[in-house]
Amino acid sequence: MDNKINHNRVNNINFNGIKPKANEVKNMDELIKKMVADLLARAEREVPEYGEFRVVWEEFKNPDKSLEATDFLLKITKPPKTLEGSEKERYLEAAALKRGTAYGAESVMGFGSKQDILNKLKEPDLCEKLKEKFIELSKGLEDV
Image (cartoon, rainbow, N blue to C red; front, side, top):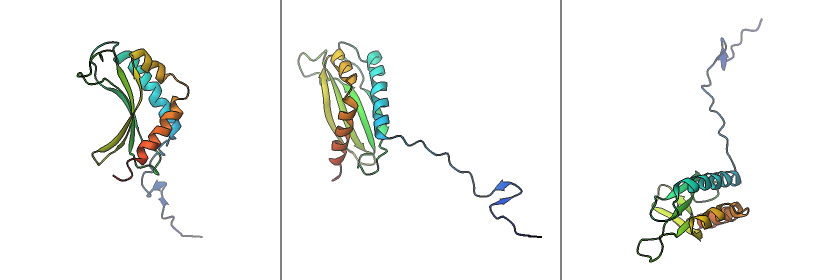
């Protein structure tokens, strides 16, 4: 008869603790597609044709640890009030942020009326362009 005790399991009790659930690590392409789709839906509801509005944005945490940025953002903004004749103008901007610092990098991906921005968000190659832009912006944060 063997009297060995299994140190990991005694009376079917696991002493190793609770095993964390495996986080679904999505790749950057999937996250960008979801971000664009979510921003498109929000833009249709929240961005007016004319006048002032709050910034509308979507973001995700960077899954690629080889890049400096911690978060990526896609947002729709309005030009400054001081710019004459800009009541109908909108900007589509991509941004890379480095949390823990006060630094980030931004780039305008498109501008025009609300319909122009919606059309830009529906472009089939936008996700690939965003991925390239996010990588480029992130590299700009390496010296920070």
